[in-house]
Image 1 (cartoon, rainbow, N blue to C red):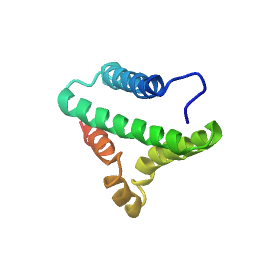
Image 2: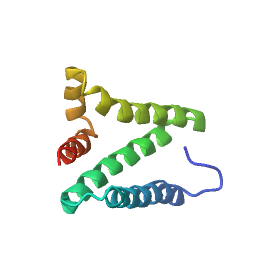
Image 3: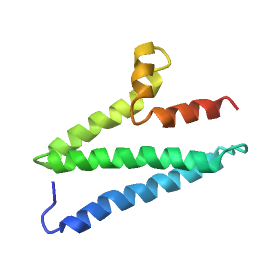
Image 4: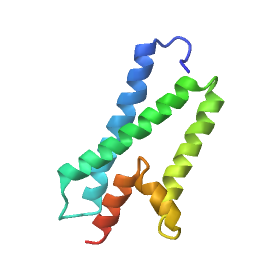
Length: 118
């Protein structure tokens, strides 16, 4: 789904670069604001960056396959709901934990679960 008046290169750049910058800034600020001292920043940034990249690329795929902005929004909303509910439900449902391990948020959720043990 390319908006009228915007070239394809400009669209892809803004859809990938701005979310990447915002996610990296948030991933750096949140541990600082929570005052987490013993943290492996390299490992943390790799996990968060790859998770964000997969999330951004999936949303970009939805935008390319959708016929209009409403379809894109609905598909993206479903992805956000899955990403939000799956880590919470994995604490209670064993099959949800298995699904989460093999999903794109598995490494991210595992890292934060280990971080919460400190």
